[in-house]
Amino acid sequence: MDELTVVDYGMGNLLSVKRALEFSCGRVVVTDSAKGIDDASKLILPGVGAFKEGMAELEKRGLIESIRRFCKENRPFLGICLGMQMMLDMSHEFGVSEGLGVIPGTVLPLPPCSLDGRPNKIPHIGWSSLSKSASVASWRGTILESISPFSSFYFVHSFYAVPVNSGHILAECGYNGHRFAAVIRSGNLYGCQFHPEKSGPDGLSLLKDFISL
Image 1 (cartoon, rainbow, N blue to C red):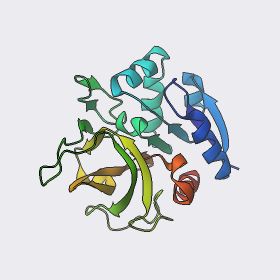
Image 2: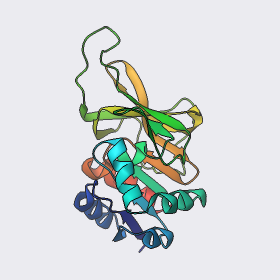
Image 3: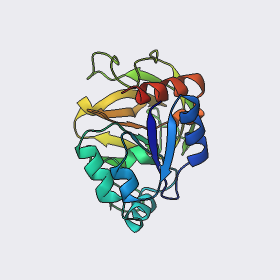
């Protein structure tokens, strides 16, 4: 059984993520130390809350450089929600804040209005379907290999990731006419804007495919 390391920096749904990973046939270790990250074979960075606070908590625990080093070695990595957003270079949430910079890009607020001018409900909360990005030919060999296009996942967010390279967008989601990155990827580094641990059987299938990387 594969061992998975979940980063504890005080801002993740650790219990839900841990249970979902264990249910998906993974042996889970929770760590709040740089050594625990260095020793990991597969790493999950969950997250709920504000980007700036999340990065501050990682810095306070001395985890930023170990996460960057892990990602530089292209070991399997999964960022969930805030964890995905922190993979990028920076965020414009409550000012400009520096991220981990493992995938080039920035984090922006969801548009306040739909394409026809109606106010959007912010945050975006609920089930939304995924579609394949135009820049990828197939989900084969990725964490979405077992997922059918237009399967729905559970989102809770007010900001979204904008990678510099559209080729890093594996799947997209629509919100009142706007499209945004729902899954990003660079090599073995993945990020999900939604919560797979709260997304039922499809979320568990995604986690199983991550474990299988």
